[in-house]
Image (cartoon, rainbow, N blue to C red; front, side, top):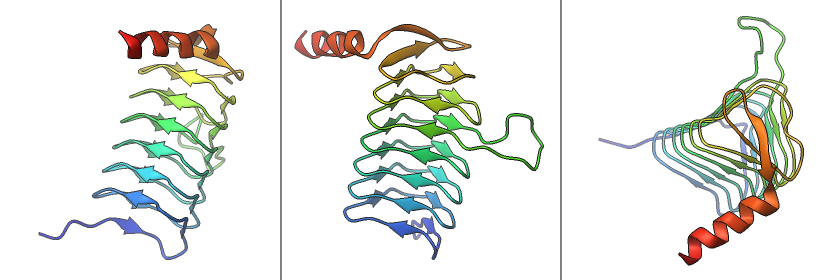
Amino acid sequence: MKITNFVSDTAKIGDNVKIWHFSYIGDDVEIGDNVKVGALAHIDYNVKIGDNTKIEGQAYIPPLSRIGKNVFIGPSATLTNDPYPMCNKMSGVIIKDNAIIGARAVIKAGVIVGTNSVVAMGAVVTRNVPENTVVIGSPATIRYTREEYDRKQRTWKES
């Protein structure tokens, strides 16, 4: 059995990019350097992904999405591009630099996730996330700052 990915002939893939098994990379996708795309990820057409970004397995990145540099997108995270399905007018999600998107988070079409922000696992994001904030829940609400998140992470690592 041959394990295959689909990578469009029109996709532009940077240096040192790792694409794991059974992933889909659509037309006119641009992937920066040092990016990891996990198994079974689906990156649809006309998506741009910045350098040093990590997209875990089974994530769905719809057409027109823009993902910055140094972003982490957790397993099975779902971005959407149609706020009122089924409509012919679409709007991608924008995830700014250094953002973290937790496992199984869902982000509504047209939402902007600000620089250095964190979307918790399982969160349902229906409106823009300001920079340097952490959102949790359904619908997602601001719970604390990125600075507090980083402090909690350091404490966890040291315990």
